[in-house]
Length: 301
Image 1 (cartoon, one colour):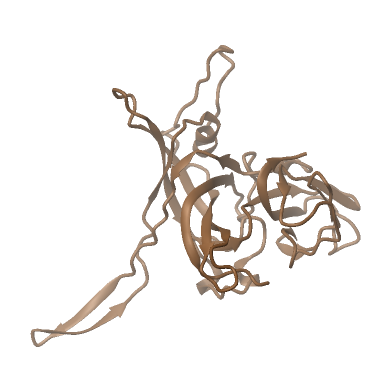
Image 2 (cartoon, rainbow, N blue to C red; image 1 turned 60 degrees about the vertical axis):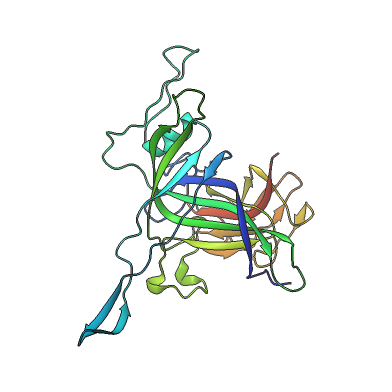
């Protein structure tokens, strides 16, 4: 059955951010330059309060003459603007990752020291994935709970500091400024030009995905060899594990090698993915394996 296209969006389930390289591949909390065999998973923000991304209005000009309005014309946008991500928690590792700094616990084991690193000229680019719910409005599945994921392939998420506290009997929040720009590929590999969205210039600052379950993505650099294994951090759901010969076109796990979609060899009972390089006899080392899959965020193995 084809996935729904119409529904009522609501809530805020998860937010993920991961460092990206110059080509737009995500490398999780580690960042580009990791050694082969390192599974790169984005930072899981569990306690976000708000991550509303409102697209700007297009520029409209009006034609007038003879003391009357005679017509209008619509141009493209002139700016994407900025947005705010609000968390109920202060998360030192997240702040350090997004500000290109480090959390220091070397001075004293009882002390955690970190900074917004506001003097950094240009912070690192990341991708951002916002997962929330959508209730079907389509015949045959009306009322069914699905998940809607908003993905920004290239964005800066810069620490903005604490608001609301310290103050008398007031709850504090930690805030980040979101500054999106355009990207030309999904963070797990495929170029937009290879898909079917028919985007202008094959680029976009944001796209959406509807799935039966929440989603996650990981990246790993392959080592030389006939096969590779990728241990996923969260359980694959949407099909009974293990799965032999999974199909990236129909199963709840999609695999990409250097941006091209292939089928994994198998998915084990603990969400261990085994794959071969179907584009060659074996991995030569350095290939980028990207996996996008449905999950309930149960830790594995």
